[in-house]
Image (tube, rainbow, N blue to C red; front, top):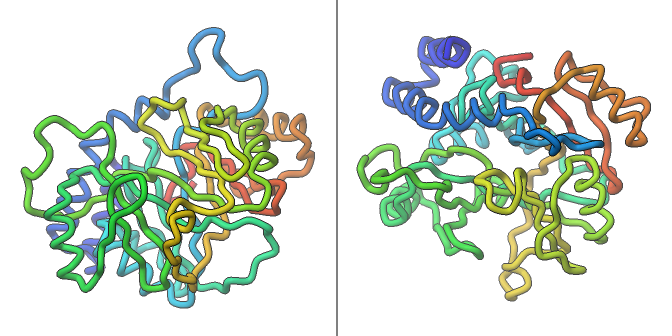
Length: 320
């Protein structure tokens, strides 16, 4: 855990992470370390390696543009228990870590000052997070104490809004460890990972076929208005990509707030990243000139013009 501890110690010295937050972050990293390590290093079973495309194992990071990154930073750190990486604060953006430790399947949120302007014909209208220490009564009380108004989320869990009216559904991480519920009074909320990405576009089938091709994802419950693409198969406790024309709340007549923030790209961590292999595979998939971003990442665009980043597990909030 050397890299994680170095980043946390730096944040502690700078005063952006108190002693309790430091201890909690180390504890949650230890809890999910084994699962992250297994996902990162597992080789495809014999005869099951994809002939084309990639095998996603996690959400690497989420790029979140908003009017004031500091407000987003403080919200996601104080409400969802994400760890601020103080050394990444550049005056216009920062990084917040959650889930397994960096390099072992961990993710990070990248709040940055930006606008809602986009050329993409699709949008990520919300990101759902999985909470490791789920206790709904305690979480409701803690959110209410912070001045938030948690509501029932469609499909289970709760939904809140961040300072820029961006929807944040939260649910219990699966599987919930035996005896974990209700054992600790703090923290009220600790994000273990991304539960799902809600991707909205006009043509569900076209987008779903593209993501299935690039990432070898099975399509579950396909309809003209919605389809689910789970990482690792429908029974795996991994993130899901939900491609839809509108979400379940809107279908039920629930009004959605208009956000003043924008997720402008998603980075997916894939297994067995090799720069030359990824470049060659992207060329075969119709992307002869992907934009390289460091030694462990490439950018391409999907059929709706949405920025998709394909990353190795070595690309972390701490650098790489």
